[in-house]
Length: 459
Image 1 (cartoon, rainbow, N blue to C red):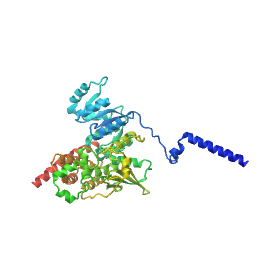
Image 2 (cartoon, helix red, strand yellow):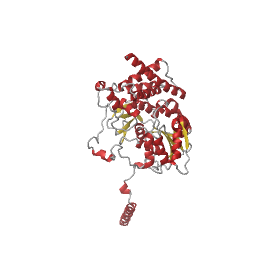
Image 3 (cartoon, rainbow, N blue to C red):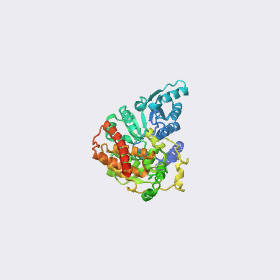
Image 4 (spheres, helix red, strand yellow):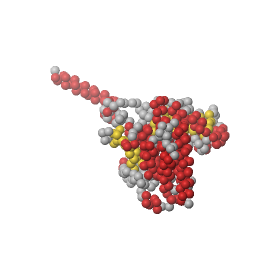
């Protein structure tokens, strides 16, 4: 009767409870109810994933090797390409024993002698040099993913060759898409490879996009620290000694990066260039890409969805997470990545002591940061104009570092080069790779010419 049924039900309940307790997990772990109705993919980390690194001795390259070192058995650098820093390259060769090593042609003999002197038993790497060497590393047979950490247009051709060799690209080289977008974008579909962004902002957007359906994004919001001069008015900058501005423009308040990118962060040209990259990476019109100043560099960028939800990705300013995610995607690999500047874990940040626990945002002043306006202008003009702007900017930064121009001269030089490009009919709407390489070369020369002319006028 009813009594027997009740007893039976009760004993069933206690049996189930005992099972739950034995499993020890169900209540302790909570219930993954969401996991039952969303697409679950495995969080299996890669095993011995073979990678090539272009620019192994630079900022991105050394941090990529840090990640390989911290996660033994996950990633294996099998080919390394560097420039002239043979001393560091030899240390990397000794540690990783890559099958192929490339360097600048001028130091190949030094590299050969150095590898010989290491006297590593049973180790005979293939040593290559020059642009061909970079391409050989980019297309190295065993490598699955290529990390492109070379600055400038030099990274473009090896990247194209890597795509043709059906390698996935962990992209840290901005010029690839800014200058090469019109040529490179169609190649991804043609060769069926992936581009995984390593840049912290683009990695943030990529992470926010996981699980957002196609067409679900309304806007992309790129955050930037505002660089060294964030808290200085344009009037104060004009009154300051140009030498002081030059020194300060190469030191960053939050990030540790190379000189070129630190200056770009001070002019905010890096944000402008990222706007062009975002346009190519995510297929978003320029009107729907916004730049926001966020002094703390904790939010790395955000997306706004069609339903007005805004998703942000946050964490310490540290390139190692974007590198790790680009190499391990879609897995989330258990990692220990304390703040690179003071060794603190992010748990500390939530306490809200001192500068911690605060997020502030503001719109950039386009008079103080004309580079942003120029980048939107170049992006909308399209064709080879972004390549022209990017190359002229590289040259202008070089001229700043060699004291040919002052910090505040940079935007004027860029604007003059863009005007010169229009006046001389140098902007090609649907460029080939050769057109892009030529636009890059022309723009560097044009920047030199513009600076010379300005000096003559001043004299």
